[in-house]
Amino acid sequence: MRRKTKLIHGGIVGDPATGAVSVPIYQVSTYKQDGVGNHKGFEYSRTGNPTRHALEELIKDLEGGKAGFAFGSGMAAITAVIMMFDSGDHVILTDDVYGGTYRVITKVLNRFGIEATFVDSSDLKNIKEAIKSNTKAVYIETPTNPLLKITDIEAAANLAKENGLLTIVDNTFSTPYWQTPIELGADIVLHSATKYLGGHSDVVAGLVVVNSDQLAEDLHFVQNSTGGVLGPQDSWLLMRGIKTLGIRMEETERNTKAIVEFLLGHPAVRNVYYPGIETHPNHDIAKKQAQGFGGMVSFDVGSEKNADQLLEGVKYFTLAESLGAVESLISVPARMTHASIPKERRDELGITDGLVRISVGLEDAEDLIEDLKQALDN
Ligand SMILES: *Cc1c(COP(=O)(O)O)cnc(C)c1O
Figure 1 (tube, rainbow, N blue to C red):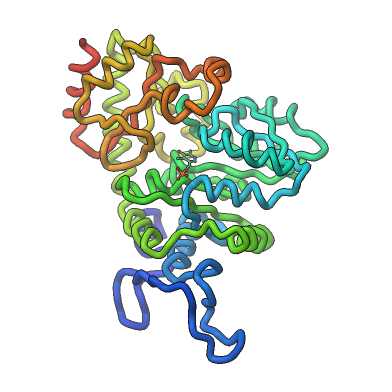
Figure 2: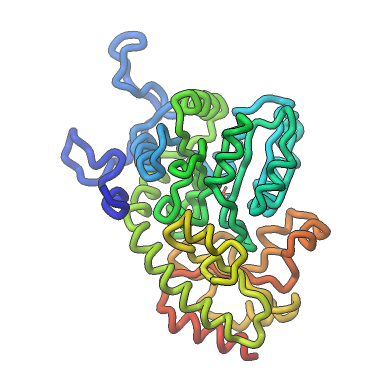
């Protein structure tokens, strides 16, 4: 099955009992047992729900893993994955991970004895040097947010394997339509499905896919024990969104290319960060491991004041956190998504006050470019 077909025919399709073409929303908490322990595969919806199960089967197929899991948010998914480790275990993470990931690791999970080191994983040497005797996993985000840095997934997974570590990849920015980390050697792939997978700014959700039966058992144990599951309504909405992921990602790619070209030629723009640009330091790796470069672009307009002027000037780019939806969004990471990262650390990472991030939507590219142009010209 090719990618676009899999989005529609992967996982569980429709409902055999009624012939419904769309998986029904099983708005139910518990299930009748014909005798103690004698049930039809579902006992209680925290443990398993048919609508959520259909979504979990779908993401499993899309990522090419052994089992899928749906959570109430990306952060719930990330937290559950890290909860598979023990107190005293050490994890190496990409340094410009999503701000919420940095926060949960350094302010919450640290209290339970999970140790972490943040490194620029786009240079493998940094991962290698951070490995300690208690290291259990390498956690990569690629491309990163907001500087669009790229880590070589295959090389990182090989390095992890040689050292007996798991490789975890946050695949939110690329989605399985462009990038399938398990095929490159990763053990666990996770998503904020709130972004491209849902795609319509109407659902908050997280997904995880694992590549072994043991990891599937361990993660189901955590999911069922801690209970951060996705409800049936939201599971259905996500499946609905995923059906059009292919055409949305293709169109996003086209719009983004046009906008990047425009930004590169505008005098008010200093730096443009996008893995699709040939001068991007890891352009070759991005090209090798993903079939598309995505719809996230960051660029520097020099100062907080210039950034504010741009935000005020645009009319089709909505000022909002989040990304990956049909509507184009604009944000200033330093004061929004990455505000939970201390200023000194932001400066270290290059997340300057003049850095602007856009998530390119599905409007007409010419309208988007005209909109940016009139705001930047001022
Ligand atoms: C948004 C995001 C998350 C967190 O997901 P939520 O659904 O907001 O909890 C994690 N990783 C990345 C890359 C994200 O963009």
